[in-house]
Amino acid sequence: MTLRSHLRIGSLLWLGLLLVCFNVYYYQDVGAKWSDPHGIGWAPGMVATALGTPSSYCTAFVAVMAAWEAGRLARGGFWELAPARSRAHVVARQLWPAVTMTWLGAVAPVVMSLVGNRTVPDAWSLLPLGTVLIDVALWALVGFVAGSMVSPLIAAPTVGVVSFLLVSTSVAVGPPWWRHLSGVIAATPAAGETYSLAAAVAPVLFTAGLAAAAVLFWCLATTRTVRVAVALVVVAVVTLGASRIVDGWGYVGGVRAQAVPMSCVGHTPEICVAASSKAEPEALRAEVVRTVEQLRSAGVAQPPAMVTDTAAEGRYPERSSATVWHVPLTASARRGDLSYQVMRHSVRFPCRTPRQEWSRVVIAWAAERTGHTARYEKALRADPFFNSRIWQQDRRQVDTALALPEPGQRTWFADGLRAACAQGVNE
Image (cartoon, rainbow, N blue to C red; front, side, top):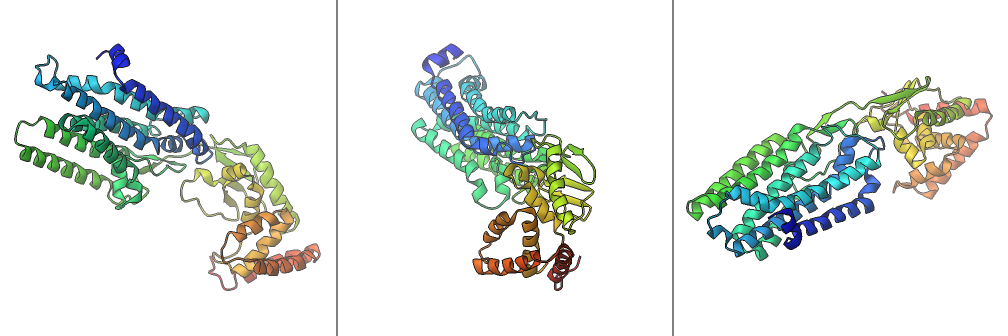
C-alpha cells in the first residue's frame, strides 16, 4: 500500500504514533530523572538509560502489529493469488509502517535525553540504539511469520507477550548470559565505559536466529516435521554461538574502556572533573579549599596536591592517598554535600580497618569543626546497629575534646587516629 492508503485504511501508523507518544511521556515522567546517571554528560550512559524500558515496549509492539498485518493478508487470501511481486517485497511493504513508527518510538527518548543534556554522542555511544533498531526489524519478521501461519487473534497476543517477556524479564532470571542475548539494555555503562561491538552483536545474532528459523519454517517446501527440525536446529546453533560470545561476562559485561576527557583548575589542590560535567571546577575548588582550610586551621589536615572526581573513574574508583584524593565531586555537588565528603576524606586513618568506636568519635569531632554534625549523625543512623545510646557516648567524648585548647585538640585527634588503628590492619 502507498502512504496515503496506510493513513486511510491502515492502523499501524496511528497506533505507532501512540507508541511514540507513550515513550515520550514515559521518558518525561520517569526517565528524565535519570537521564544523566553520572552527572558528567556521559553519552553512553544517557543512551542506555533512555532505551532501558522502552526497548521492551517497542519489541512487543512491532511483533503484535506485524502478526496482525500478516493475518489481514491471510484472511484476504492474498497468498493464494499469483502476485507479481516477490514474497520478500510484499512483506517489506507491509511491515515498513510498523517498523518505522517503532524506530521513532525508540529514537525519541534517546534524542530527548541527549538534547536535554546538551550532549553530542559518538558512534560507540549509539551502539545500543543500533541493536534495538535491528532487533525491532527482526522481531517484526518473527511476528509476521506467526500471523501468517496462525490466526492473528492467537498469534498477535502470543508473540507480543513472548517477545516482551523474553526481553523485559531477562534481568530477573539466570543464567547471567541470557540478559546479554535478549536485547535488554540493563546495565548502564559507567563513566569511562561504552558498550563493546560484541555486546551489540550478540543480541542481534540471537534475534536473527529466531527470525531465520521462522522464515525457514514458513518458506521451506517440505513436511512440517522437517521444517520444525530445521527451525529448532537453527535456533539452537545460533543461541549456542551467541552464548559463547557473552560467556564469562557475568551480570555486567560487554563494555569497553574509553577515557573521559578531564578539565583541571588550580593547584594545591588541583581540582579535576570531567570536561563535560555540569559542575563548575572553580566553584568546586572553592568549596574544597574552604573545608580543607577549616580542618587545617585546627591542625588536623593538609591540602592534597590533587582532588579528582570519582564520577569519571567508572565502577571502581581509586583509593585516596595523602596527596591525591578521589572524591565524588560532581555527585556531591548535585546533592549539596560536597563539603561533608571533603571532610570525610580529610580524616585519614593509618590503617584500612580502624576500630569503629574510635573512628566514629574522630570523624564526629571533624564534623563538628566543619559544621556537619547533623549530616554525619544522619549517615550513622542509617546503620541498623547504631542507636542513640552509642551516639550519646560519642558526643560526650567529642564535647570533652572540644573543651580542650587548640593544641590539646590536635593532640587528642592524633591520639584518636592511632587508637583507631591499634588493632587495625596496617597498610
